[in-house]
Length: 475
Image (cartoon, rainbow, N blue to C red; front, side, top):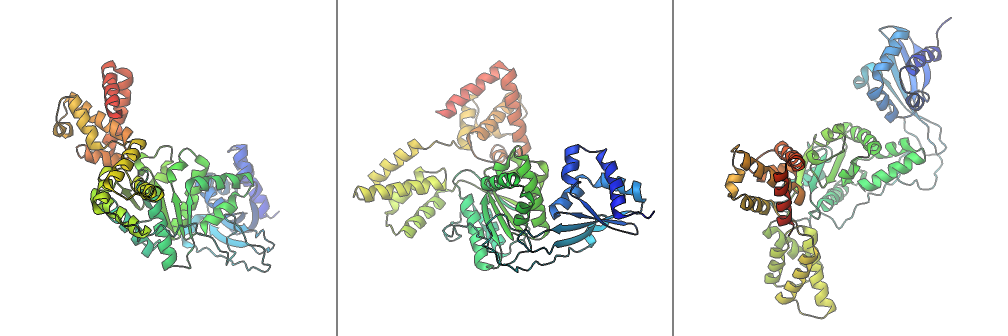
């Protein structure tokens, strides 16, 4: 009796079923339909491109063994990707990809015409192939490059953002990861990139979303059994901007789905922009395969603005708000609020409000009063320079000795403590901490932090060093 596609596939399934977990079999193999057997090629139909990618990534070996066992060493597997249009049109989206030679075959997409215009489809569940569906970018037009002032602290990130906006997906900055502490302008810059792209390329689909909202959408999609629709929606975006990507830490399901979305976008020349409060090397509970992709493009750090940049930011803010303020007051505020841009602008807004509501003239005295309250109510972030000075004084050595290359035990321990407290009390990346404490690399800082943790739990004297320095730095 001549074998059919179904009988060959059934025999393969018997072998596969015996070699994987029942839940995995039910999820990834039961939905597959055998559609054709021709010469040495078995064609199987899968419900989505994501489904195919998952099989190829996780089950390619067992598929190969099963197929070889059933059809011999020349056996080939052809995937037919068929996604039904759930809005009434039954014409499928089909793609044929031989497992043995995927890269040589171009994906064939069949456009799905919109015969019956249904009510406006809502984000984020749109089936690919449906055209002329407007996707709102979620961008804030007030965050643009014109009011994101350039300084030494942000020059690399800003210029990289402009390069990406001029040629999305066409630079080596893909993905572009912008990282830095709170209030330094990561979200502003991310929006500015999107706003500029929409202005230059109105036909491109741009979407800004926070990692928190992305996660919630994914959870909702799983609950409603719309996981594939969720993936398909994000795969049609031309420029995807995800804010606070560190929030994905520990969320393995969301990380997994983002991994596949990222791969699809990157492979198809689409632009990905990410922001994070940490450098990739400092991100914990993020899968290595994701971290490695974050490093494919450019990671650009935003640092605290220097005095000149702070003055420029304040003057620009006042100009946009139509407020006139003496230079000495602007400089006083800039000199005394150093942590980040958000606090800087917050202080100047408070000053304008106090003056307006209480009908007071903006004087240096009023500025001192506002800044004093503002600084007192704001958690102080100590600088790496200050930490090095405190640690050096505690161990009765100068900062140059602390930063030196010497391997003397007491100096090495002092240096490790400085690195440990820099990580604890500042938002600086490991690379930035290492660079400022004796031009070390991030691995040295990571090792220092682990050493301090270990010694604190085993060495009573060392634990006292940590307690004493913690008190000094917390004052």
